[in-house]
Length: 331
Ligand SMILES: Nc1ncnc2c1ncn2[C@@H]1O[C@H](COP(=O)(O)OP(=O)(O)OP(=O)(O)O)[C@@H](O)[C@H]1O
Image 1 (cartoon, rainbow, N blue to C red):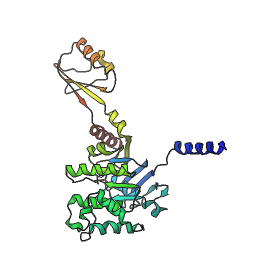
Image 2 (cartoon, rainbow, N blue to C red; image 1 turned 30 degrees about the horizontal axis):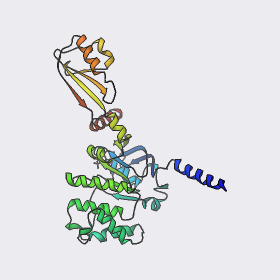
Image 3 (tube, protein in one colour; image 1 turned 30 degrees about the vertical axis):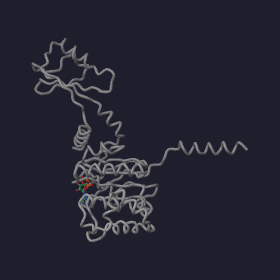
Image 4 (cartoon, rainbow, N blue to C red; image 1 turned 90 degrees about the vertical axis):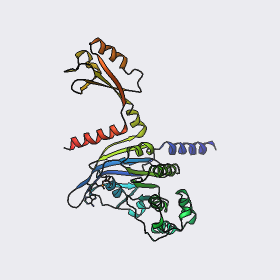
C-alpha cells in the first residue's frame, strides 16, 4: 500500500522542480516596414510568468514595434513569437486572449460611459459577461465612482486608467503597457507604479516600455535595453544594481601629467582633463577597494593632490554607455 503514496510524492516533486516554460517566447524577431526601414533586427527574449519586465530605449528604438509584433498587430518579417505556447500568427485568437494591451495613445470612445467601454471590451474577446470582475477592475483602478461618467469628462490620468481597465477586462495573463506614464504628473506616476506592482502580485505578467530610467529602476524585476531594433541587454535589476556598485575616485593633481606613471600602472587609471585628472574605478561592494594603497603609491610617486572626490555610477550611465557603444558598433 505504501508504494503508490511514494510515487505520488515523486511526481509532485518532479512537477515542482520542472522549470516553468516562459509565458512569452520571442525568437529572432525581425520587422522591416514597407519602404525598407528595419525596426527590429533579430530580437530573442523569454519572459517568465509573473515578472515585470521594463523595456528601456530612446525614441525610435523599436519598443512599440516589438510590443505590437508580440500582440499580433504588426506582422513580423521574420522570427516567431509564442504566448502561453500559442504561436501569435498561427493561433492568433488563443494567443491574443492571454494578452491585455494598453497602447501609448488614448483610444477610447469619448461619448461612451466608462462602465460600457470596459464591459464592451470584454465582450470583444468572446468572454461571457462578468459584472463582478468588471467591478473589481474598476475599483482597483479607482474608477468605480466614475463608472457612469462619459470618457470625455475624465482627466487625462483617468482616461489612462480606463485604458488599463479595458486591457484587464478579459482577464489576461500578460499585460503590455506602452509608456504608461508618458506625460503623467509625479503623483499619478507613483499611483501607476503601485497599481502595476499590485497587478503583478495578483499574478499578472507585465511588460512595459519607458523612457524613464527611474521608472524601470522603481518597478522592474528585469530590465531590457533596446536601441536601433536590437536588444542590447536583458538583466535582473538586482544584478544590474550590483554592477552599479562600481564607483569612481577622481583625483585632481596640482601639476599636470603627460602619462600615468609606470609605478601606478596596476591600478588601470585613466588620465583626462589635460593631464590634471586621474580616475580610478573600483567595486564599492569589495572588502578591499585598493583606495588606501593607491593613495600611498600616489604619494610615493611624488604626485601632489589638489582635491579628490568619489562618484557612484548609475543606471543612467549604464544605459547611455550601452546605447553609445551599440551605436558605435553599428556605425
Ligand atoms: N508603420 C511604420 N512604417 C514605417 N516606419 C515605422 C512605422 N512604425 C514605426 N516605424 C519606424 O520604426 C522605428 C521604431 O519605431 P517604434 O515606434 O517601434 O519605436 P519606439 O522605441 O516605440 O519609439 P518611441 O519611444 O518614440 O515611442 C522608428 O524609426 C519609426 O519611425
